[in-house]
Length: 521
Image 1 (cartoon, rainbow, N blue to C red):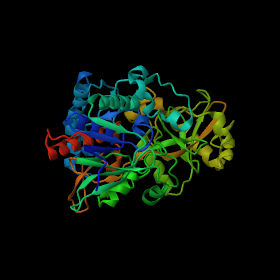
Image 2 (image 1 turned 90 degrees about the vertical axis):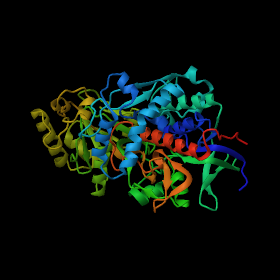
Image 3 (image 1 turned 90 degrees about the horizontal axis):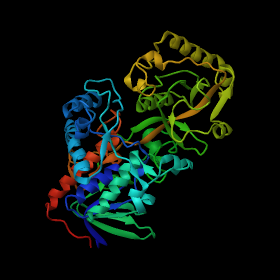
Image 4 (image 1 turned 180 degrees about the horizontal axis):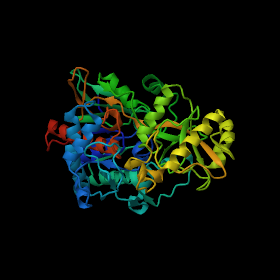
């Protein structure tokens, strides 16, 4: 192979995991190249709320949250079980505080904690959560790099007006990490440069990547210490979603249409990597929009969710991944549609968090929002048996009047109460009444797939026989998630991705020695 450029570390992707890994490399004195397929940095991470789940970190302690790594391990182990290897789980949680310290005290990213409950009632749970966030950053501070940071999902996919005077959440993470990489002087960040294949030598070691440049040519980039593959999942590949998850479309994902196309899993397969959790995603309810895309929807304050028969099937205030899984179970049983049914007692707007907020007129014209003066008429509009939907609403109203959801236990968990500021279950149960009833179409959406390379505790990619593919590491949604088939708490996708990328780079550094960095050529 004739190389066009040589670096110590090549990072494929530019989401939270990728940029954290690149920062870890640059701050170790390693020459680093980040290649991003699209014209903006951030991937799905830029769309996210920016929560990073790292138990026992110094930010939590500073803000008075009583937490330790051991409490986190107790909780994580109870929820995830043995679906993933205990040594990888422990590596994630034990290294989490190290990464938080690195990001704030070495890189200089200001961090804070924002309360958001863990998602399962299990030993070690924190009702305050373990989430840390990057501090907001103004457009003035971001400067010329603002145009390189992917905008919010509302602006990027739904054409909503974007106020970019201040970046928060996932955008703050991406902007701050890009600026920090620029400041190191050791990192080249390449947009519109898509990795096409991994290069292996005769021994099977991964030695670099072949990528397409903005002008359509190919460039061959050598990685002396290793390649970190953190290029997202395959949620935007209709063929792979159908094959591994039996999903009818790839359009309901929250990720950008050009990211998550499965590039990573295809490259991993080509070099003989072991793959796992291909049937899994970070699921969520999502509101369907006229453009065929779907927007992540959570925090229902009132109303009910019914299937195509007009029946409730779960606690509507479940953590979103659990509600998404309940919807997936209904799909497997033959239900084709889901409707969020609510009244106008608090106005005619969606009583939930959905970004962008749906426009009633546009969704009505598309057949995705129905309104009627009675439940029976609403059912007819939806093509549902009026007797079924009326019976469902009557039953829910009866339970609401009693103040206890005997059917699905709504409001009994701290997560459900969090969004309505409730102190007991009864406050989460408001009967449906008012003078109008609405129904908005929901689908089983996702925040990305979570199946990919099987990695060890250092992020190294393994073969089916357990041996390591030398020179190849994976993190984020390009790897099989350390959380297995569950979503333990807010920020686990970003947190685990950042930590495993950090550990991968630490391992790469040992391959060439701390002072063995080379200048890009």
